[in-house]
Image 1 (cartoon, rainbow, N blue to C red):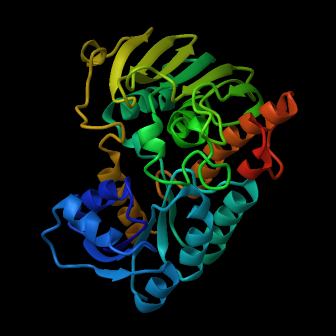
Image 2: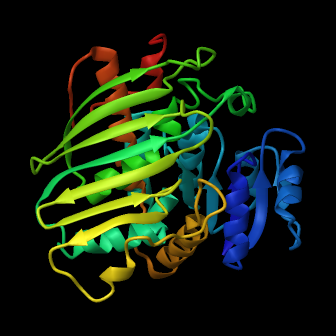
Image 3: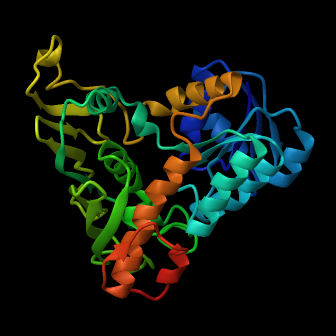
Length: 357
């Protein structure tokens, strides 16, 4: 597989490692900032063939017509524009979260990818965590029975030093707040595990400690699903003095599970009415990880490659990214209007929140 990475900032290192772990070719790197691609290679201690370096993704797509996968890892506000250019060029794409900053752009990514027959994966890599996969299997096997409710808590710390690393962070046009940037992985898991079809969202968000940003640093929401079950979302970057946890609770008529750790990489609770062989070892399962991004990038890349080779949808496709975005934007709209928001969400964008705080 010939891969390219567009955007060589903080998260791009995980993409380089994923390319290397799968034995794929790193054909090209692209960043508008001079020297950033070279810096990424140094951070990655890259010892393979040197990728070609470009200052613009349009130039890269024109010069690299045989790319198999392009990863879009720029600031969030540029994801949709670049991803659509990749799709139009016939290049399969992995889009870092969020896939877009508006429902119109997200829906267009889904539509155009299907129209052009291009594989697009949203980079919600936590779906590949060992603990997450065990819980998902229990969901698919019906071990929870009817769902009562669920909740996700993303209790992290992001200080001024973090936001000072890039001027686009915390802006409505390019990033959004903690719910869009830090919490969207948890939102994806919650919606996916609870059955997917959210019908209403009511939320409150605030900017408490980060008055140098445009967006929120804490938010809570109540989600109602089509089957009558409910869920809560709590996301914040205000936890002192460091990241605390990312947890997901699922409560069913015949099962309870809690995923914990810093990035839903552990199983803290595993209780089911239909006890099975292997259940005794589930509670306490921990997948070691060196950072909050977990270990899922390499598996996500492998899945996309297999999807290309076997002409199937990626495990985490563009629609999954669209659906996680929809919940976050519904939270924003609820804060803006002070009212519950019904889904499906008509067009709403992060920039509709400008001036909120």
